[in-house]
Length: 374
Ligand code: UDP
Image 1 (cartoon, helix red, strand yellow):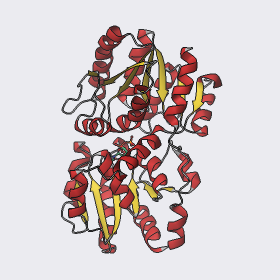
Image 2: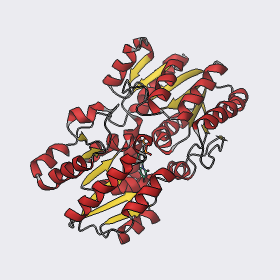
Image 3: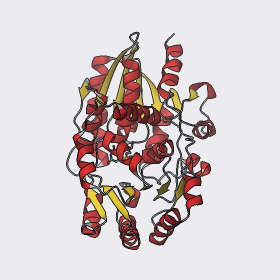
Image 4: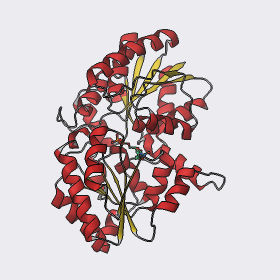
């Protein structure tokens, strides 16, 4: 029973790590991990925290990498891994170029493809680009679909995928989050990054945590976002904005240029996962364009403003813990103001029911897979 788990970026690593750990405890499987390293530093930080040593490191990150060569390199390098290990099942996650290309290579090899976080859709093939197409193609190549929610299962049914090949598991991001909170609360755990945050951030102020990286927001979107953050900081001196800036140069450049010198905005490097989770717990409001962050935040009782116009994650919007504010400057400013000033509104948004899962997604995946192997 040979499993190969493949991932390449930080969010995939976070969401696949608990599955790797869960499979490691099931000795009836031989489980190996292959990383494409589409992200390098940000991925390595996650591996270190979860104590995962990949069996195959394709090390494919290149300066200014583009989708054409990345895709080609992944398919080509995966061939070697697939021919050597000959896995029965290959697990890919979500919607990155790694997901799509690894699923295709695995399909060519004859292995069964298992898609974790399956069925998220905007039904607009160019938005988000290239994620919507990546996950749709991966879905076509997949044998077993692990849908995080009922809505994602319904999306797959609309694409005529047989119900028997889909199982609703919850999102593994909650498994990862609970693992991390647990590890952070262990009094033996020490973390120099967290110590540094304790020293450098004024926690007597209300903390607004920001992340943003999406390709669809590069250019004008980020300019508008930065304008909004500047206004929020200026109008609310009682707040402290903290922004771990994604390493993508299309994000770094405008953010450092436009927000570099403002007293209550702190720009820092991306945080390792435990430090980020720690900081989310300390935050008052989270403003983000990240998928993972909006799935995690409801478990920590934090309201989230999402800087996107469409979403493949409608569940939290419906549950009322997330508001889509887009990249319109005025909108971001006014929704933040409302959260800062209106206590009832704040409380409604910070209720803790999380539609994305209960921390048992990996258990459900393994139960399902066991039956498929039998
Ligand atoms: N994250 C992190 N450090 C940071 C910012 C985010 O570890 O400085 C984590 C966050 O908790 C979430 C994931 O990275 O689990 C989200 O990644 P990203 O926003 O890059 O991608 P997306 O979720 O949009 O796919």
